[in-house]
Image (tube, rainbow, N blue to C red; front, side):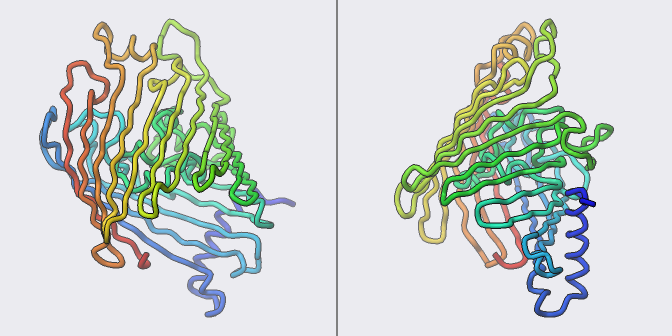
Length: 377
């Protein structure tokens, strides 16, 4: 009898814990624990509706197991437990829709990811369990340096769903199939449409994908010389309330494209565009990108994110007042290691038309990120 893939994910994770305590020395090397703590100190210094400084952070502890440790050569597993702390800085002090810190969230400590991966050969892999969609799709590798959440996953996707898609801070049950041939690749995913519990979105829930409807996503990766092109599309099988209350329920779906690569040996860059159905989503179009340069021990980055409202959102968001067409974020950041286990990152962000509010002032935010990691990275 076949076991449920989600049961297998947790079985492997539990086995990894046991292996960590009881496995012989040869097998024990296949069990890899880890932990990280990332903290942002953020200050609204110009234009804020409520000036001040806040501290937000995220703590993760995880365990990885190579299946060979328990006699399953083609299997591996991962479990990650996460907690966040800090207030809603972006909403209270900036009014921004594109979250100033990728660490901000309203959630309780919970299992963030728990999955099993089957890889029978170098060309095929299948993953099932609680999966972060952004670990598989719409990955902006160069953008990972930046603090604003728009440079992790495009807001055209992150806005979707009743509680967001299966991304930080809450994941959903999913299955992902990946096909790889050299640098070319195709990924197909089915995620449960609701991330977290239907009673309390701050709590994790275990359901088979499709129980509350499904989020379907596909992405192709094609090399362009030394650069890489990613093109993807996503679609919810359920309908959502239209932004215009006079309209019938609407489909939530979209497309995105990303090109990324090296300009010189020490400079990389990326550009990303995305579009979402404006009947069910506020953001109809998104454009972002930037560049990162290595200078000595520093990594220096400059990026921009431009999120445009759809026509239905502009008509309804601020009632009789017309909302701004777009919210734009410009971020300047720099990162360097202070120790093998510590990175420090001063950061500046300038938000133009925060929250598309026609009466809001532009806001300048100064921040300082500390990233601690064990084992040493």
